[in-house]
Length: 82
Image (cartoon, rainbow, N blue to C red):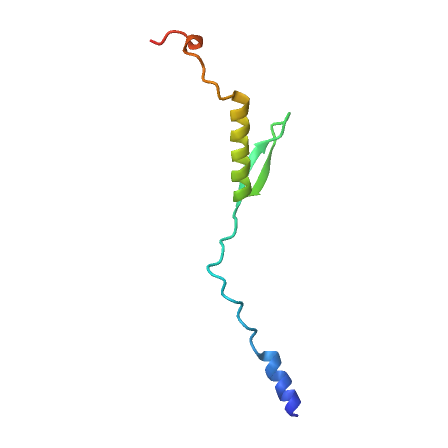
């Protein structure tokens, strides 16, 4: 009889709280946008984590900078300034 009481007490006991490891990290939210499908008027919905979207934007900026080059445009190529 005592073993049944102890078993019931163990089964209803609350589990221990997880150890405190500092403030909880906020979840990385999803960022969604519509982008066109090549050769169509239909768009598709694309969702990425906010950190992944930021990484893709940074890579696109770097690629654009490499494609444009870092040489300044000479003033003579732009014509006279008015």
